[in-house]
Length: 322
Image 1 (cartoon, helix red, strand yellow):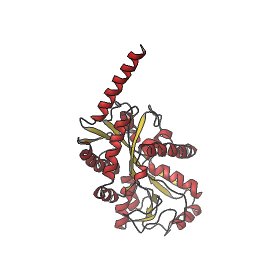
Image 2: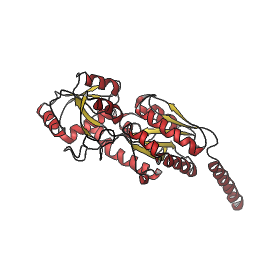
Image 3: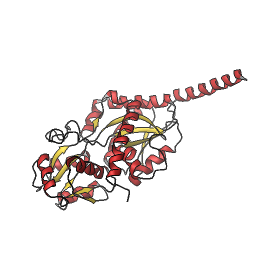
Image 4: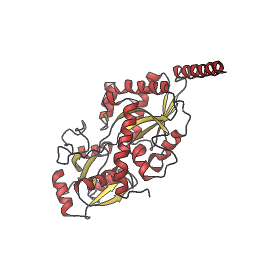
């Protein structure tokens, strides 16, 4: 009986190994949990285009929007664990949503980390005629005018909303949040002078900053971004430790074979090492993570650490889905 069980185990192991070695034998789908045309979609298409050469199969982007990204993540969490369906999640969909929504999946236990892609910092921007000229002056002005200033957001629980709540906590300031159906409409009202501030992702904020229609006070990352080299980091501008990046990464369904995860990770690493790809991503304000942080283990550790940091902040601020 023992010999039979061992033989059966060896057979199954051999089948699994053969499947992994033959991966992929058909197209791979990357689900982007946001509508087409946005920053996440742009990054996904650049990465997918590079991965197909390494994998030898088409890599297809499928946009599944809804519920702040949780609809698309849930789709992948319930998909077969064979490596053919991945989720390109981000800080919002794979960290923040767990504290805001009642999810029918577990962000840590129902998904397997594949690889980090990079960081998309936020900008702290104000309308053109806002009195402050730099971040220190902005904080002082907010403190002198509690509850009188407005910040546009992409809705309750969005990246811009959570970043604003974190900003209030770190600066001991109070201002009113104005929810929109996305950062695009919020930026339009900012340019028109209807609201005072926004904390957009770099891809949304860079064009208007370059055009001179708004003022950028700081970048919420540890280093300046190539797209706006003259805009200081929050650390440089006088707000040390204020770091919020809408980082993006790939996950597979839990239970995906380790060899398949390794194959997918290797494809991502190869793509991100391409100077042309890095330049295209950099033009979007997207900063590729260093090679040492592109491992599946590094992604799993970062997600866990971010959940431990941000969930208490979200709950303390009373941020809930609307």
